Amino acid sequence: MATGATVGAWALVLSLWGAAVGSRNLTAQIGKPLVLNCKGAPKKPPQQLEWKLNTGRTEAWKVLSPQGGPWDSVARVLPNGSLLLPAIGIQDEGTFRCRAMSQNGKETKSSYQVRVYQIPGKPEIVDPASKLTAGVPNKVGTCVSEGGYPAGTLSWHLDGKPLIPDGKGVSVKEETRRHPETGLFTLQSELMVTPALGGAPHPTFSCSFSPGLPRRRALHTAPIQLSVWASCPFPAPEPVPLEEVQLVVKPESGAVALGGTVTLTCEAPTQPPPQIHWIKDGTPLPLPPSAVLLLSEVGPQDEGTYSCVATHRSHGSQESQAVSISIIGSVGGPGLGTLALALGILGGLGIVALLIGIIMWRRWRHREKRKAPENQEEEEEERAELNQSEEPEAAESNAGGP
Image 1 (cartoon, rainbow, N blue to C red):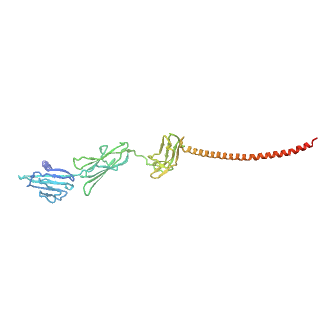
Image 2 (cartoon, rainbow, N blue to C red):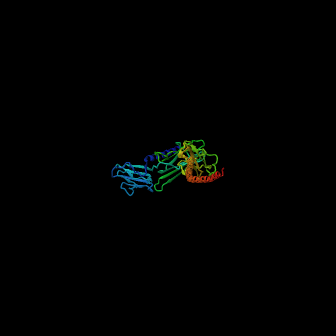
Image 3 (cartoon, rainbow, N blue to C red):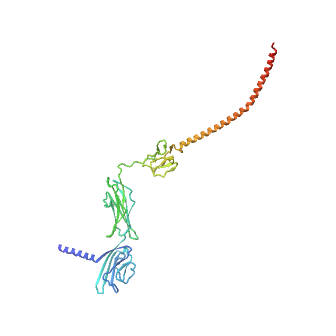
């Protein structure tokens, strides 16, 4: 019994080996022509041969002869007995057999197993992550391959080594779609990983497409390198409303010597921290967001009024009170300019008062000059009257003498 079973098994193996030897496997690219030779067929007519096809276009074996027929646009027999498929497609996959009779009456059979393929475009990683958090599941990205046949497979790599899904730290979600008209495949593979605490800080991921036919090279995506952040053991703080924005200046007076340094700090106590922008004399400064504005080697161009604006995605924007920056000893400084203006006004008023005093003094002198002759005449008249009164008294005294 054992010997009979062994003999039967060897007979089955030999029969399968003979069938494999008699059939040849071929692959052809979709849309390209394919020529199948009929062995033993005479090179010139008259020919006795027959082609039989069993493909996706036929429900059973289709017989073609050198005389041609309505299948010429799909497959036709050439004058030398070969079979031509002008533009092979997915429906042409199947078995092709030829039986030829030579002029000597020798029969030769040929058999072909034909498969087609289409190379897809280079795969891509779409929606890649910007960073990974250790200890929690993270989506790395989605690998996509479009326009291939047969479907093929997608696989992920970590630092150049195959990444095997284990359902725990590494998981893959795959999806395969087939175009209803072309029959070509689109593959998607979404990778989820859970980086270990204390693991590689900058892992590199890549994806590759392996065709479904042998002896075809794999296609690789461009690698992406991600940073792994440590997970926070405590819950994130609750958002804090945006309170009054404070602007702190050093030196506090805002006055600085020419060539000195001024530091402006915008304080906005809220979580998460807002974006800080700066304004000078009512015009936004073209600077990246920063809570500190440093003015080094201050010059006249830095003088003016400064304020900061804190912008929070949940609380809107709020502007601080403005502070003035001036230069000590600057000719064009705001304080010294005001002092110069005040001195100019006082000087002008002094000159006006001096001119008025001169004019009044001149008028007074003129009046005094006019009064002087009149006073002289009155004094002469008084002197004359006194002289006249003294003369009679003298005569009387002379007459009454001895």
